[in-house]
Length: 493
Image (cartoon, rainbow, N blue to C red; front, side, top):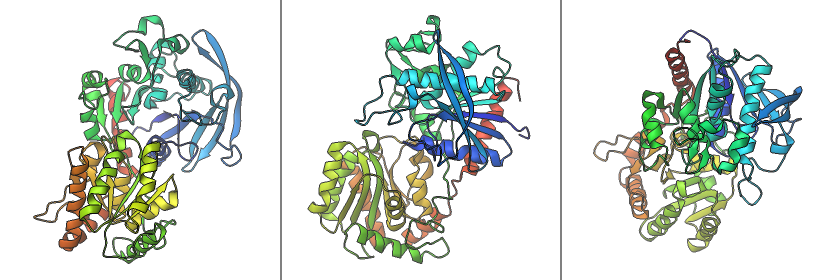
């Protein structure tokens, strides 16, 4: 493990430059930890029009770079900046593909029709940049479908390119539901040859599947929690990729995401009215009062609050949770605070709850970072009723904030929340299995009854939860181990 590696991270988003989900958080955090460990890490991402060159101190390092795509030569430019942690970030500039509002979707939330061209071009441009600037990576780390074809391009077009052919390709899947599946008409531009448009490589139900191609060509594939790696080998959550993942064998693993505790720690959090820690939790009561006041709830420390910060999407189970709130309101003394956006019907439903249950339910439709931090700090419980959850981050934040999770027993939620044992008081949260409003309501009731009837158990659980460590340092060590493993398989360690 002493060998220091040259690692190229290729991704469609990265905090703080562009973000739609957890992918950006991973790409923004993991390289910094790897850099601390002594590795040379560079990030390559698209330059979207939303990225302010002045704010991020972008510098032009290449005015023109030619990129061959399916017999057509495209042109782009390259900018550069240094991210916090001394990690270089290179931006591929193509106004034709990235000079528009939105990363993947237009203002009406519809996918850009040229997304297959946009991200195939970006992936090839990133590889061309490695050649032009003589990066010579040991590891090409690809993220999600948007860059998955990097593994195919390396093996098909760059197998004899001395600056790329010794790199091991690693593909991280952040969500199996998003695969980059497009019509066969886009395949010619991708430029990987008709002989590879087959059912065991890039073809999928008559179209092209970027993620499938990445799985088939990458030297090793990982996803963002051990349980999700197991679940996605089954038809229930494999989304059609289960057989290909199964045949990867030991070349498909799960590595849990980490938490950036510089941004999510109640002891130093600038967004909450009172800081607190495991040693002195008095500030949490002030946060709870502030949360009740902000969301027009009855101000009473003896009433437990269940918080939610989530996208209103099918994956997240917020439709089931909406019905569970109604059930809970009928027979529990409990309050709910919900922050989120997405599905328009769910937005409307949740916006109506405060009027239906005044002083008992508060809702904010949209995303507001300070409010999200206050919900984590001021709530007693934090609910994540996901149908599936590759990793999840909010349950990890909740543990640090002493806010006990109420979660479905799936994916990263299963890996990070220890089930409460009513006999002993052991555990760090409350888990349920069935995907129904009744199961959610019953588990909320279990948590609420514990709050009222077994407060000594709640106290012990909070202490245990706040002691948990899911830092990126731990996760980065596992990524480092995976890198060295795949290099040893290729005889390059």
